[in-house]
Image (cartoon, rainbow, N blue to C red):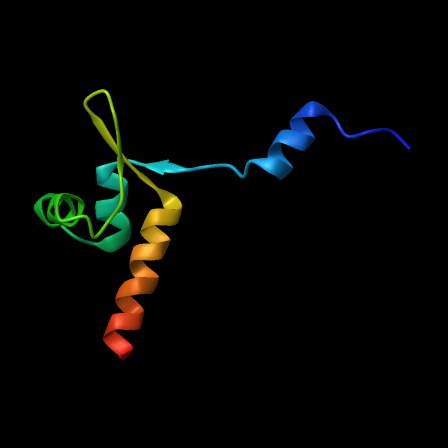
Length: 74
């Protein structure tokens, strides 16, 4: 049996991390630019800054949605 390649091992150990732009987040949440930046500024939606670019990890958007759903049902 052949051993897995380095690329296969890397994929198993470190899952792919999708980074979304603000316009992509706007489209997914169907919100305007100001509303998305308010969520980022208040820390309700996690993001990272790369130079002058703001990126939202896809998992952070998913976590935000789950948190809001839990709050609305409580």
